Image (tube, rainbow, N blue to C red; front, side, top):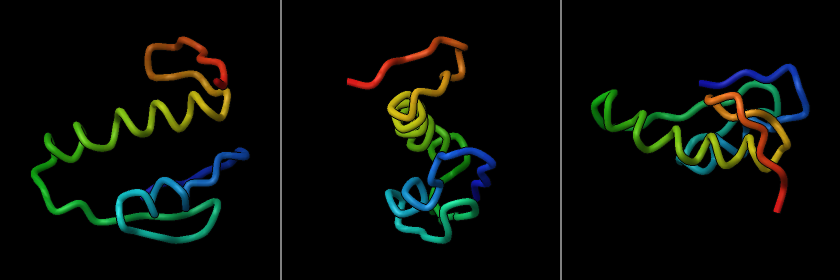
Length: 65
């Protein structure tokens, strides 16, 4: 599940993985071992946040294309 205090719409994240919810609180179920779920979610999450002008996990700010 995801929560947001910013302008990031986490329902779009959840929907990408077959889930749903609201803009500030959403979630999904990924039927895979945790290590595989992380491998699926992190690349998409980094790209999504970078598109929102937020910093990625490495602390680097990516600009919108």
